[in-house]
Image (cartoon, rainbow, N blue to C red; front, top):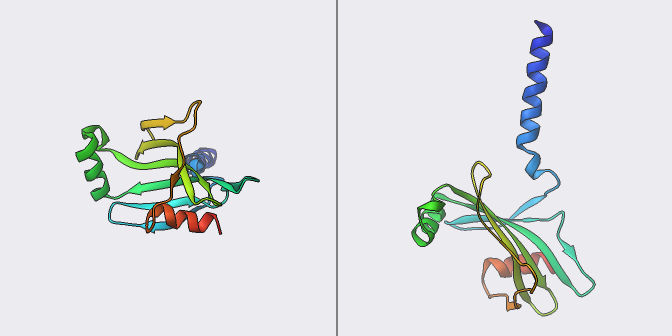
Amino acid sequence: MKSLSVRLGVILVGLVIFSYSEVWGVDWKLFVETDLYECFYDAEDASRSAQNIVDVLVRLEYTKEGVTGVVKEFGKRYADLSYSLELFEINCAEKKERILSVTEYTEEGKILYTNSVKGRLPPWKIVPQKSMDETLYKIVCK
């Protein structure tokens, strides 16, 4: 009987570890909170190149209001939307940005939408003032 309870304990610990494996190696830091979503950036893996360009992963966790807005704009397919991961590239010297990839997930981790740059990079855009993007710029480019 004891070996059965030990096995069940090991299985439970394994399931807990497996369910949290996505966040291992990621140091999510909250940097913006709105009625629609909370924005986090990966503070551990943000990398700066010699050209003063930072690659940083951003996680947007949608609120109920945020999901409702996305459903209105893009359809019922997004009713189970939970969060999205976006890879930003920020040119600190010129205060410009571009998004290299976007992947949107359900609560269960299923992909609803994904889009990543293949081949030609998108053009740089000026970081909008008083925006989530400007807050991120100020954090990663300091």
